[in-house]
Image (tube, rainbow, N blue to C red; front, side, top):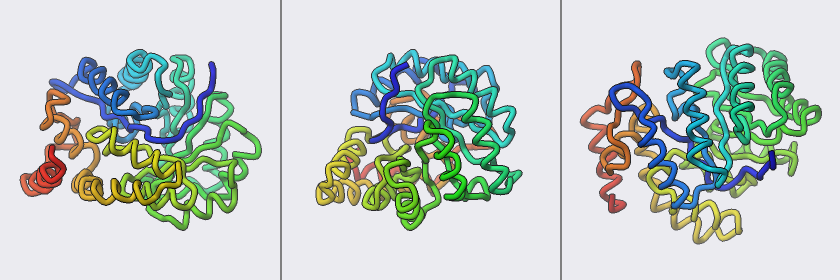
Length: 295
């Protein structure tokens, strides 16, 4: 498989449901709209894709469908992380065999391993595939941060561990990653509202939720930043900032699914329990942000 660089705007795909079953027609429609909008890749079955409530068969089927629908036009980065190393190994092997271009591996959540445990977890997974690995550090959900010394050890032994999705909310952290690893690490923002600040200190793109609704605008913002045109990137950032925040007034992906259904892009805003529909008050906040952007 020819490995392609992973940077720019990568959509963290929702998993559309209809009557609580995966709606593959809506998934295909969404992927086409995203590619037409200029995105540079997809992450199926991450947190935005409701991976915790998909069974293993569904998980693999959504990865396979995304690969099929993308038709090689952009990379597909499979979410294969777990707080069980054995489960993550199984998912990673299955995604590798299905033809995923890369893997997104979240830090183990809830059981909170030590930094040595984190290293061994990711090292085991790095032995499972030779495809690019994107580490995913999101301490707000996992309760732990992937320490920079762990990343340095992994990077030294496994050349394909060369990306990180950084969702710790800290520009300093991105700066520290780049200071420590330089060109040996590609940082991708895990938070739409921090994409531009992160890119100003060396990040090279975003794994985005907002790009579901505004693929062209988010892609333009990121491309301007990659070209060091922060004046133009900043204008788009400031315009989209209210929707960046409104999409997280309730747990992701509830607001983005609500907005996509409102726009007629997907048939329903269904999520699987324990997630549930938005409150009326928060729906009003979301709708006002969309109206202000002409949606």
